[in-house]
Length: 410
Ligand SMILES: [Cu+2]
Image (tube, rainbow, N blue to C red; front, top):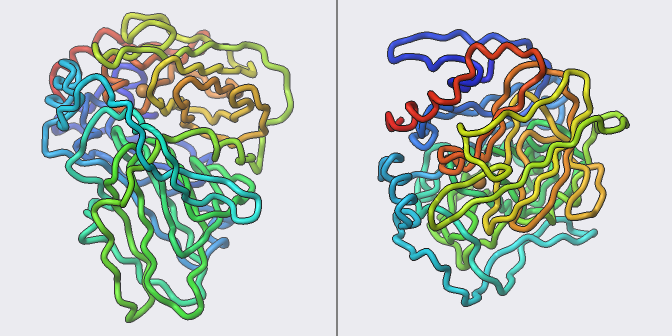
């Protein structure tokens, strides 16, 4: 029961009720959102935290931060403007100005972990200029303040619930440990600057200094200076102002973080029974985005059989990063641009421009499952397909109705 209209259920009609029932097989940081039309952009979303005793024991306090992007323009109008090449509300022309500029990016070093650095580079391609980025529905001039105790360990569950914004999360003075991604534990990695793609989650374990104080946790959007955040503050600490804009725009997400991640509980060794190519293509000017050269719903499903070990080979032929999300399964990253890794288990995999990334999963959850780019407007124009098990119940799968759903505006 994952709520995808015309894939695994019918939409919930206005005034209707639907009971979702599912056994809890997992724990961790998740979120939920409308999968109908463009409603997700209207903040029809919420955190879904499945806490386990093991996770609760990790920290003295826990807080959840839901990051979103916000526009005063109706989502249907945003999509329409993208289609006529206006590149969102900023009215940017189609051709990117190639001039390089100073950008914030993530660097890795063995001693300190992930940190922020300044590089010379071009702005990454993004679709939309938003009016604001928000954290727990608040702008950065009015951030949520979590009152924490000096010396306490804090588990921050950070969720990129954005429609079209990839983030960098900056814990500034508080270096932390990345302990889980997409609800699944990884071998802890330290640092204070982390990548977080659309729909992904990171769990950060942070220690409040014994002397107390106020500590902003800031999330900056890829390709923009815009930022949002929350503040951890001990009693009586003066809460500092977080600026709306960072000094430099943030670079594009890349593979540097993913290359360092190791699943705590990797999938068992097993030969691959089936390899599914997943070529990401499209055209920014005409604004269509494809999987294996075709747009949804004009396409076949990707088919698997129960019990198989399946590999997906993502190859991104476009100039944009695509956060690829598979419903109903956790995939493990096994190869990044030719480098083999025992990577993280995830449900959303960032595929940067020109990258090839391999993941594996076990086909152990029969059904018809949505598989799509989690940039809302990419999925809406066709960067979407389904993973279908042989013999699965397809009673709700009506690809053609997806178009009706979209034209109704959401
Ligand atoms: Cu995409």
